[in-house]
Image (cartoon, rainbow, N blue to C red; front, side, top):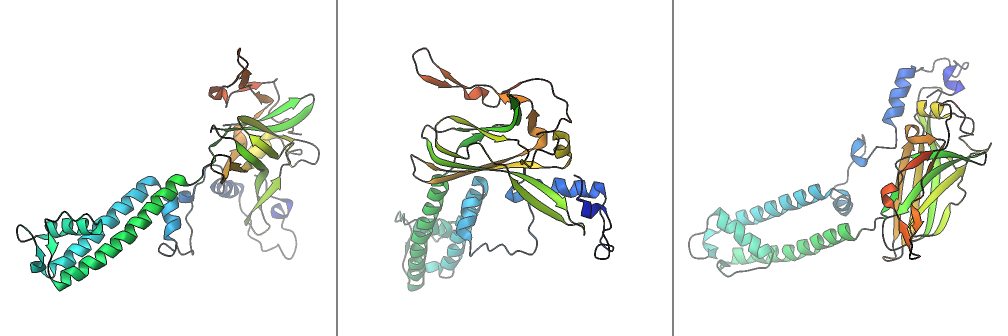
Length: 325
C-alpha cells in the first residue's frame, strides 16, 4: 500500500527525525492488520488482563464447544476429587458394604453433588454430614449455572445469513456498481435489516505508525424491510465514492478491504441478530454479475437455487488497471 505523501517525504522540522519504514515493512504490517480472516484467537492482547473469574459467563459463551465441554469435565472431576479428600479425613464416617477407598469416596461425592443418593454409601458422622450439606448446596448451584450456560449457548441468536464468496463490480448501462449478495438461510424472515458497507484502509502516518480508516460506501438500499430469500447490495461508484479514484490493482496492492455488517430481527425468535464479513480486493471480480437464483416454478411457486448462490458470470473483458469508477 502506498504511504501518504506526509509519510513519503521528510516534511520539515517536526518530521525530520521521524523514523521512515520500508515498503516491505509496510506491507508486512498491513497484512498483519487485515480484517478478513482474523478471529479472536488470532490476536494476542498485551497489557490487558483477562478477567477470567469476574467475566466467567462471557468466557463460557464465547469458548468453543470443545473447550467448554473440556473445562466443564475437568472442573467436575476436580470438585469431586476435592470432596473425596475431605471425606477421607474421617474415613469411619462413611458407611457402606466395606471400608471405602479413594475411588469409593469419589463416586460417593458424585452421587452427593448430583443429589442421586443410591443409598449404598451414607454419611454417619458430624464431619461427613457437614461436608455432604455443603456439597449438596454447591451441587444445586453448579447444576443451575451449568444448565443456564448450556441453554444460553444453544439459544444464542445467530443470523444464519450467507454472504457471497466474492463481490462483483458490474457495469449496467454505463453505471459501475459494487455488488454483494446475501441470503437468509432460515425459513423465517428477517425483519428490518440494516446494512452498512465500508472501505477499510490502513495508512502510514509521518512517524511510521499505522492508522485504520473506514470510509462509508453508500448503498442504493441500506435498509431492507423483509429479507426472505436473497438480496443484492449495490454501491454505485460515482465521483464521490471512495472507490472512484482507485483501480482494482491499486486497492489490492494496498491491502484494502470491504467490510460488511448486518443487523436485523429474526421474526420467529423476536431477537436481534448480527452478521459480518469482509472482502479483500483479490475477492472482487471486475465486470461480473451474480447469476439469477430465484425462479418461478411451473405451478406458480418460487424456487430459490442456493447451490448457485456464489456463481457469477462475466459481462465483458476489462483491463486489470481500469479505474473502478
